[in-house]
Length: 429
Ligand code: AMP
Image (cartoon, protein in one colour):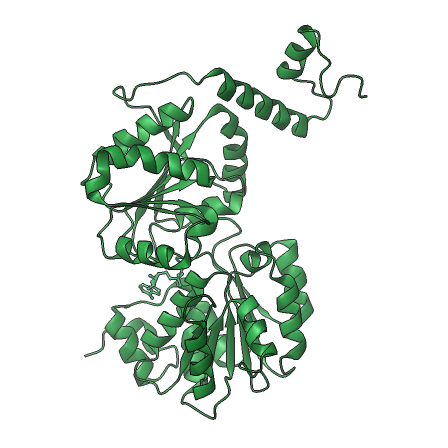
């Protein structure tokens, strides 16, 4: 009954192969092919892979295979993830893949349900998936016993550090048993990631499935050159009118403010299709509900900021629209990785204003790609930006030029001087 031929050679057992078959996976992804064998032989692993590559199963399957069956009350594997959403998602993968295996998985992420999580830990478990702060809190309160941990996984290591968890991670590393297997996954291998891996891993096998900041090949990426916020709104409106193609869309904004403005505009026309906004001000429950409704296709459009969107794993996303260009370049990869997951294809569309060109150049250089430009459709009304927007743009472009060339004074600076006021940098050498 199983159609898991591609997984057969990976030395997993029948229970796992059946669960993989139930999920409909036929071929292991590249990261799975490369990580599973050394992970099964107990080696330390650094895996450079973005989300969407199948990295979760790459570490979950060997853990399930090695732990094999429930034993004692104290966990033997600890997986850290930067967000609750990602922790929940990893926990779900472990439960789905381990459905024919007798192993207990507990996901710990605080907030509502924290006391239930404590009870589950007390009842005994084999694998704990946790956000670092909650892991530390439960360790300190005695609910999470770490002395039996034999396998330690850090998922999305660079994000864990971005979110300020470095201190907690080092504290946890202090109290984990020394003899253990370590696996670290990260979208990029930055200096920080290198440092932390040097600090806690010996002789890791280094697996890099996508060269640094390379994007998944399955995603077709496009750029529209757009002049100003209002025109971006018009273009978004135009694209989303094509409901057949743009049937499951995530719109990324750089700030809560922009996310709310975009939502307000879209609600006027597309409310009936279902629209939700995800940003840091929303409660955890609201965020989880929004993602579930998006997954179940009760809503067509999800508007999100980068932080709020971490760990969203929703299949079948037709388009990722970057309403704003991300200024943290890795976020570009994370964002577009929401579409075209695993073996599916997807599209990304990025709106680029003049002040974004500098960033787009860098994103393309880092990713080693050239993103195709499309002409603005004729029916999209172009609205010239107002004075304030234009001024901010000029200042930003000047700032960029100064970064490239510290001698550069800039148009904005000249104008200020001409108008009789001293520029901020006047008099500086
Ligand atoms: P991840 O990178 O772990 O977040 O996985 C991305 C998506 O790929 C998830 O929706 C998984 O269910 C799916 N996936 C993982 N491995 C496979 C596989 N071998 N075949 C098909 N889909 C997969």
